[in-house]
Image (cartoon, rainbow, N blue to C red):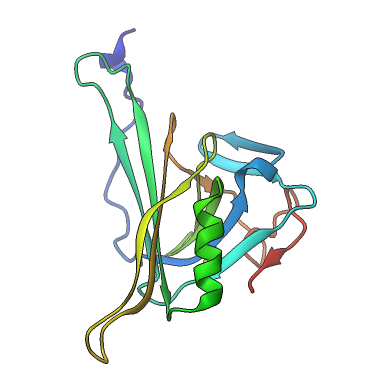
Length: 189
């Protein structure tokens, strides 16, 4: 069978009651991840052993996720995905300036908690940078020209992957509390 017969199903119109945007981002050092298991585009297991995940709680306009399919239309052999995560943080601070410098030197994996809810009522969590990690690619630190202007950070992390981003297996009560997800703790500040 050739590529012209690879379709396996269609898709109907799903419920349109869904919220966009990012609620929280959990970053891990890609080099500290000892293993990750993805089955049918779902992360069912990962381990950072004794290392931490770092939680960034985002404001309402807090962030976005985008994934771009890149393909050679003639051969379909150069198929890959560019994953992007944009994080907005309010207020400029010397602590965030220092963290920005560290992020710029790190290769990361991101667990992105969306505002979207699944059938169990839990927030959907995506995983970006599974095979190659993400890097801080660009962004800006700015304070606007009037009182109502944005004052804070926009950080953009990007990476390239051979497969599309995966969803994480659903959690029990708190995001990433699955028994098959191993890490020392989640650090907020």
